[in-house]
Length: 165
Image (tube, rainbow, N blue to C red; front, side):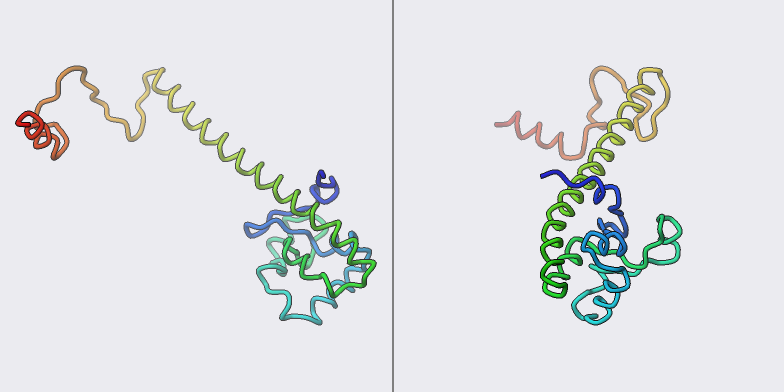
């Protein structure tokens, strides 16, 4: 099952978590946003701040439609049993799509990090090929034998014991 485009396009990455704005979640469940807010306020112990959180003023400025709350996947799942039975069916179809959309976002973030790492390595190789100095790389790379004083500590002792044996 592929994640519905409307959920994937509305999913936000806030505070290192994938979350749906309260208005989007209410719309998917066929509720008014005020009804969803009232439901959360009526059961404050059931919805911890890590799963259903209020957005700060800074976060609201960056997000279109300025939602008040954001629901993580687990926060949305906590609505089960609190909404009416016909709305509960919509919730159970929403949760797998939410999970798949979260996986898509996570995979995209991982690919982005890997591409950035490859770009850094490529840039370093290009600098080396062009003869530029690279931070952290030794400038003198002599070819040939290394004097005993320049050997890593403990290497001479291992070589001596190897010769004696």
